[in-house]
Image 1 (cartoon, rainbow, N blue to C red):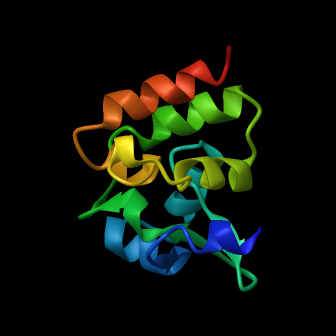
Image 2 (image 1 turned 180 degrees about the vertical axis):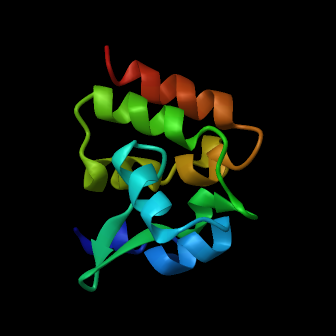
Amino acid sequence: MSDSVTAGPAAWVNLPDVAAKLDVSISKVHQMLRDGQLLAVKRDGIRQVPAELLANSNVLKHLPGVLTLLRDAGYNDEEALRWLYEPDSDLDGNAALGLAGHRAREVKRRAQALGF
């Protein structure tokens, strides 16, 4: 990963902490990653999740759908992370932040357009 990608998320959460935050087992977090409901990349040798993708004790509502669209468009996890954190002032700063706010529909529309 390039420095620009690792600089995108404001904070990172390791998988055991994700499990605690979501109040699920670590095996459930691994299942969520396999099922495409959550995104994690290796940072400093440890798989971590961008903190912005977690809202309170849940995964952002629209994240699994956007990840599916990105994967269908051929994006791997690092490319999806890069796309989510690419600066975009129309999306409240970037797509990851847009998903957490009122711009989620626009983020999904843009992700869907990548497949065409």
